[in-house]
Length: 464
Image 1 (tube, rainbow, N blue to C red):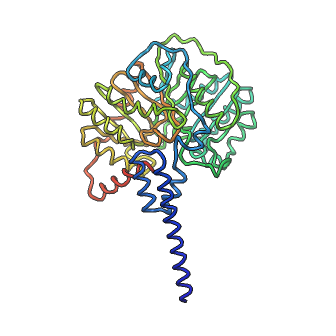
Image 2 (cartoon, rainbow, N blue to C red):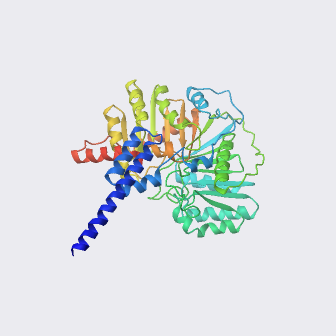
Image 3 (cartoon, one colour):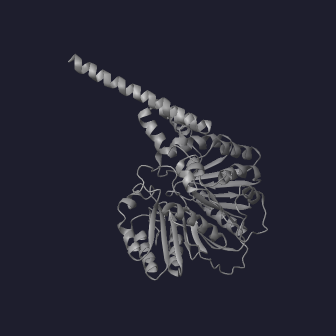
């Protein structure tokens, strides 16, 4: 009996010592890397307080630009296509971040919901003559995606070059059971999973996900924005589970930047060199200035993140923001508060309840701080809100794949577009105003327990 007791005690002591050594080693490794103090504090709390969870999470999630996997991917650099003479404070700032200037000749159509996007996408795919390249985080297995696969397979059988790049984490179920994709491959199309858990289980990272979303047809037309490809985002009819989202279709010079980004991600994933063929752009007289801004660890500078810091300082009249998830860096929060103190009207719309419960709790702590400074907070009640759009004065609007959180700013691969035309500004202004009508305004006072919960998750936001 005593021997069994002492054996159990010895095992506990060994486990405790090993846990302590792993905790010290993990904290030491983290302190040897370049991290923001807020991120370090959050990780230290998780590692020290719950080491059996915190240490594995750190191993899985840690790292960014210094990671070997990032170095293998290389640096994304967009080409300078048909540089325009358009200049604005924001476009010049992005130029200083090595982002090419806005392209000039583009035709743009905004899809205000999933039904508009569904029919626009079908039309694009059916008109494809040479190529269809798709990059998505989520590709579902439902009636919408089955129909899209049927169109893609038909196009591939006709000799159209069809390639799909799907994120392994976002579409994990599909990677393990890719039955619907076999029809595409049998017809001559190709698909690959980005940072695959199946192909690279040891090197698999929960961070560093390809969150870029684009469908590029014939090299000159692209649909992009926040929508993934599944029935929650796209539908032939309105239904109660259809999310509120935005996408846009660009035909013209800006589409070439999306093609550059796709090629870069495809070469990294497939370990093959792309055989580039010249893209024949249609003649477009319209002047529609669009600046495509990739973001993520494969971009040399944090241009998009720094643009979000710079944005509140150049705004003179208003900043309207719509995002499904809100957990930004403190620097951006401070910049928004300064802008509000200067008299800039700031309104933020988030879903009343998103599909991430923990993030909802964390975001309310951030939003409550902003509300106390006079920034207006709105909660969209009708359905899940997944759109990502920022409207600044009457000068420009930003749309794309990035959420307003640290994961999108630093750890995911994203693509945003800055539209500098009054048509897009007016269009999105009306769209946002309609969403205000379906919102409740402001956060209710929080009790002691709620405040403690919000502050805890807000403090841990860099690791969730």
